[in-house]
Image (cartoon, rainbow, N blue to C red; front, side, top):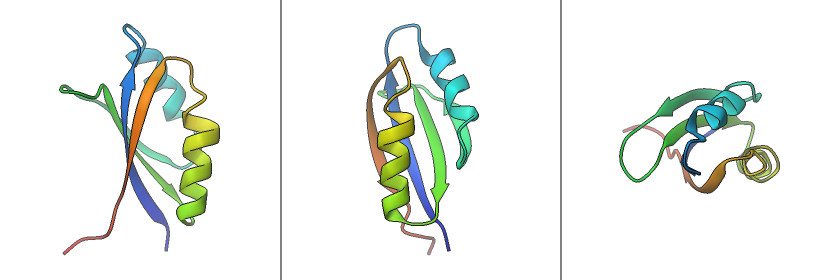
Length: 79
């Protein structure tokens, strides 16, 4: 069973489109949605386990030019 996480992303001004494009090509990215509110993009990722989610966020997502900050929310399953 894989681990799913929602990554809430705040981008630098004018960088949302570039960041979204860079996210879409990463392995394990399920969705990339531009949103309104305090965050600019919400992306859903899946990885084999919690450690893999952490590795993906720190080594692949945080290194994308134009990302100001992120918040990672782990899915705990449905009702």
